[in-house]
Length: 231
Image 1 (tube, rainbow, N blue to C red):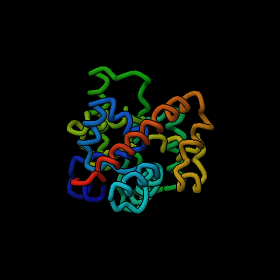
Image 2: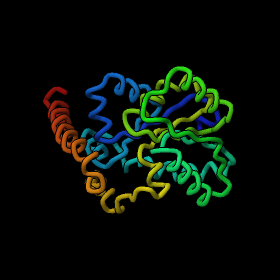
Image 3: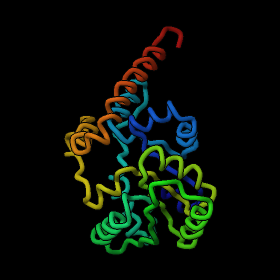
């Protein structure tokens, strides 16, 4: 992200969970969005463990909320500005702005917007692009959740002048304090999904019960295929 900002590049970064991977298997647009990303980062420990088993040298996950928190601190120290796109509503976004301002008093929040729960029309999208470009942020944090944030970043990458976009999912809710994060030991042991499902069973239960077994099956097939003699 430093490199993108310093060189004025057009880069976007995706934090990929089991949910995101399974969506990419079903949706060619989501798959293309991940493939176009400058970095597709493992957001959860199950993805890290799978990658390790497949031979990748990965020490830990790159958790979206943690990255956002650390990089906002870095931006505050360096005098860089951020833009916030997402959140449940404007009140939730106000809570995030207040939390970030309290945590990092010198952080410059150039602008923010919580979009409606529907696609923006062409005029609304053009207004949004003009607004973000006029504000001139170094980083645009996108908290729409998968697959909306990945599709949005891929579509907007060539229209926005901000050098770095990062999709961080539920980070807006966590950093604002609206939603409690899982205890660290659950995150380290790949159980964050269980914590989140216990808090929102109706919304997240079907997602995890559908995608987790599919992920395990897909991983097992890939692992067996790559370990076949001759591969």
